[in-house]
Length: 60
Image (cartoon, rainbow, N blue to C red; front, side):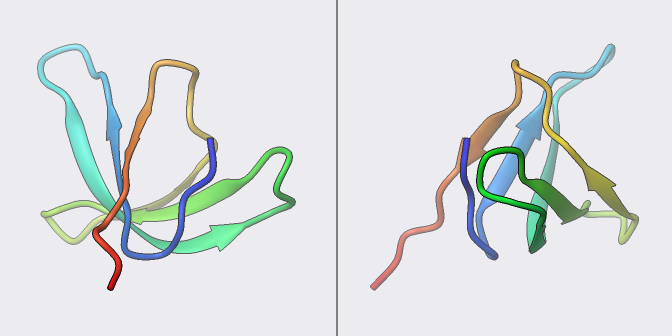
């Protein structure tokens, strides 16, 4: 699973899916971690779980 800055990540949570914008890509391509900003402004560094989904931003 590889994403770029500006893409979104969707993570299944207990109550509802969480969707955040990827603001930084960290780590090697084989096991990337992402800095993710959620709509409430909270930022986390995360390595996505297998059930996470990347939603790629349309690129020109």
